[in-house]
Length: 263
Image 1 (cartoon, rainbow, N blue to C red):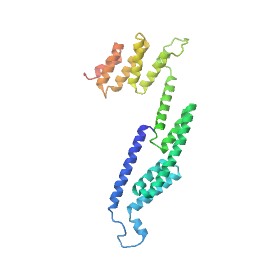
Image 2: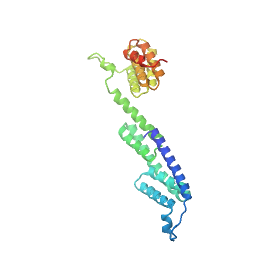
Image 3: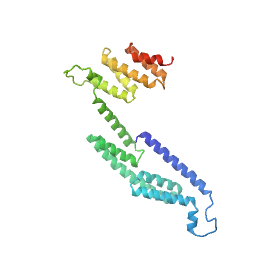
Image 4: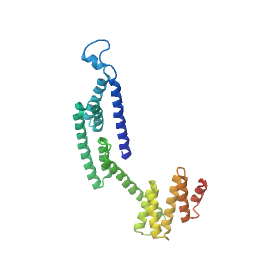
């Protein structure tokens, strides 16, 4: 349930309302009444496609309200309000109000849970917000923030190349540099190569002789090239050339460079 989900939901709702409008316009041209000559309101209702649709949609809206599915209820009342604005405007406003109240309660709960550091509970509360208001931006941003926090926690909890190459028994306190290297590796793992490369390049410019930083930068440039070799060969070639300036004998970079089309 992220921003892309909200965009898709909005598109679906717009298409639904547009389709309903076209359907009602088409139905307006269908003769109503009783073609057999039988009189009575029941016969007219059975032969009126608009009335039948209205009845089904109203049942759907009421059922959604009873089940607390306010997003579905709002959508159903929107369709009916398109059909008969004067008759269903108040029901639509009430459903929207109930959805707003419920979303606000869950959003406040998510904020409190996030402040306490309870990511799992906050995630469920944010999802609850999006269940009633799929376009709620703060909830979508909150979920993305939780995902980033988890990725950082999980990645930084794994042994890195720095810790694996550490001498046995050595006690090394985490430094600003090691934290930046871990952060850059995490970003690269998420496909955010340019941000990781920018961070490592700044560190390399500040410490040109730092072998660990140069190696990390070369590795990230290689990963970017590998990711782009099919979609953007030119960008991949540029990344490989930067990598080879740092490590001229990098076998993986040399091999990939030979495979790329000249350009």
